[in-house]
Image 1 (cartoon, rainbow, N blue to C red):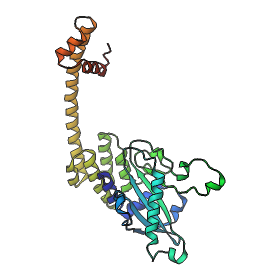
Image 2: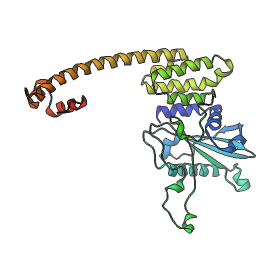
Image 3: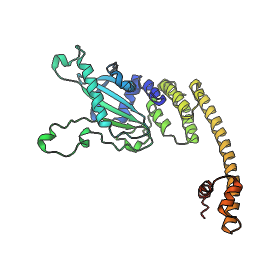
Image 4: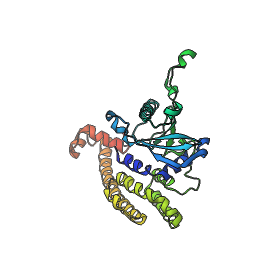
Length: 311
């Protein structure tokens, strides 16, 4: 399980974050009738050993009117968009139903009716998600009779990075809670914007009524940043001030390295430009220039191309 997955699994182990995720990002009318006071974490030990990678899934249940609804949160942090997602969801939900059927205390054994499962795919990849959200859309066209044998299952999709991909997105609605903060954190594209976001958060949590809402976010952010900056020191940061100070230090260090790298590239470009001019004027051959620099002709041509010095 990746560090991003661990951070999210821990974060959505808190019922208040599950509630804020659903209320803030799920555009279904029935959400208004969910009784979030009945939220219960479900044991996920039903997953077979050969599918242990699915242990990062999170399953909760709550009451809708007088019935239980299961909320299946699938954490999907792959580098590539997964075109098989509808089939995977069908598989995981089927495993959940088999697990539930093994529980003789389930309501099914009284009413012979299974509970509804609401699968939620939580995604934070760089690419736009362009996968069907209903498994029916993956099948070839067929006649009306055979259509009855095509499975039907959908999942609700939430993109943490691209707000335009969401049917409902409460990040910009003025809400102040840990879920909104995690979304903003992952959408912050630059270090300066990140520090600006943390300073805004500092002002919010000055209010004691809001401070408790961000305890789980702080834990999430420490683990998240330790991965993003590849620095485990973030795991030990206890306050926002510490995080800001560390980030400024790393940013300044990176800028210093970028400057040195730029100076090196400047020297390299100047040297290449001199050889380029001599070659263009016929004072030296390409082979002689490469030999003087101590590289191959192919490498020299590639370097020329890098600086738009086209022979």
